[in-house]
Figure 1: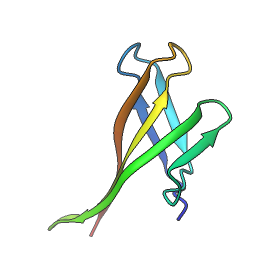
Figure 2: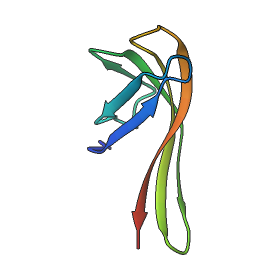
Figure 3: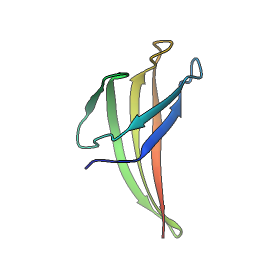
Length: 79
């Protein structure tokens, strides 16, 4: 499954703004030409009264300060 949405996150160490595009959630490691290896884990979906969401944990190294961090990214859909 390909995700055409852009995920946006910030390095927790230096504050660098990082955008992730088209992550394949069928793989545990995705290689990006700029960011290197991105590890994907804990892919899950949930549903509520107002819509649904898909989330995953990503672990990557910041291209600016080389700090490795893990973050959860999500996509929400309304009913």
